[in-house]
Length: 509
Image 1: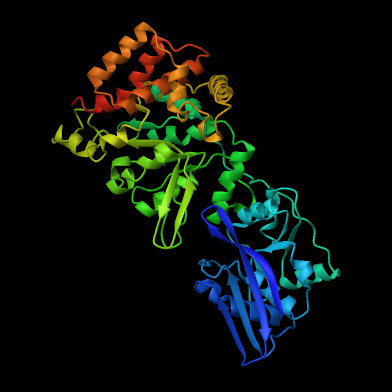
Image 2: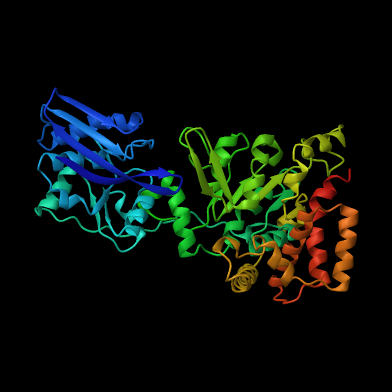
């Protein structure tokens, strides 16, 4: 008799059905697992054997074969332990086939029979719910799986508790969804003294989901400004929170099974490798740009990142996805992130201050800026200078809470205008930074003065077609912040200034 237990294999954020087939036959004692298992799956037979022994059961001295179907799909991870154990329990007549046929099993086993949480439980639960099936998982994974919807979830602490539940001698309570309890104090914009221009750029970036680069000397507050962008962004919608949580679930980064309900803020070190940023490796796991999905990716000291790493961000910045192509994997991950970068004007950092700048000016500046390619800079919507903070600004009183509330209200109003305007587009294209180009031109008719201004800017600044359209997107966001339905000269003028102010001022030496 062959027993069948369902589980899944991961292909990016997608789940692929895997049928765990178990057969106990006469023959020389052996325990074989076939179906392209990796090392973790192959070792599961020892964990399963010990788990059954902890329950008072021992495997018969027969030939045991486990087939993971489809056999041509690579099986990776330790979550196959639980479906293999359930298949053997069906073969040993401890459980019936009907009891387990309506569930997807997902979990790792300890030697004492304890069911351990594994990454990807939310993805498994969402897939099970789409098939109108339940899920069997660990007690720790229960709150995470509960976010998948109204479905049958059996979250057991041990394998023995699971058997007793099916036998009716023990009733396992249904897990409840849980939110992360954030204890840290939110970083707010009023902590920043001075830097009115950078704050304005941050407001525009938050309102339209625009990419931002800040250039200034060390200690000017570039990192502090970037860290406060998430507090200005609107909260995650339910669908966005589920997408972000599925990514973090796959990477095993959900805290105690609780869903993510804040926009991610990822700040990789400049020594991060190309693979850690875009994803990849042996198992083609997500990178930082996917972990920043629907959130912020902050690159501090951007020129210190390797050129290969920076250039690899060009395609995701445009397409909002990243395709990881490897010999054994070809998967696509979402990568709709907002890029915020910070850099010094030169390597020594004090090119703006003649008294402290090195003697290699302007060569020091040129060598530093040449690490960033023109095509990459072309994808930056806002580029502002962040000068050194003056003593008077440090001594000034912080902004009042009402000022911060006013900024947030303007951002939410602008986002709402964009959402209503682009409601017929997919969720990924409902901000000015992401709306399709054809529709952008339809909603941004230019006046005679605006056309003349753009013509002059294109000629003098040598704007590419991409930069031209990004200027229109930023200008549209500025108009939305002012609740203006038409795009005026002043909106375009501010957009041009904020696009070029930081970069060209750093090249003026």
